[in-house]
Image (tube, rainbow, N blue to C red; front, side, top):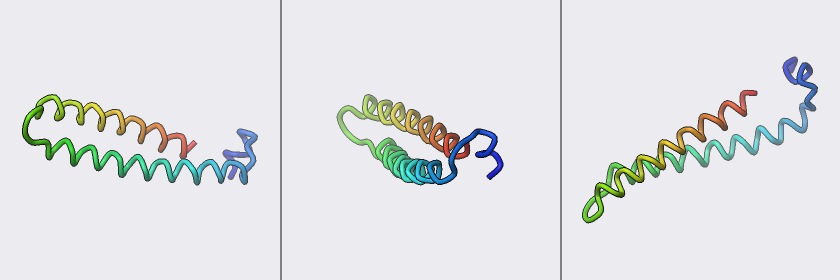
Length: 74
């Protein structure tokens, strides 16, 4: 990997970090999907409060997913 050579990173050390970040990314994707499901299936008392809170949470999760995915690509 020429990019790693330019950055002065050890390929073996980076490989472990990328693997762990990939696991985190997968977990975040599942978390995001669950939050979207909760958002769309809110019923009953407190609907508006819960609906907007789930939207806030899944938007935050989407930002974190983007950050982790970009870090993996670096």
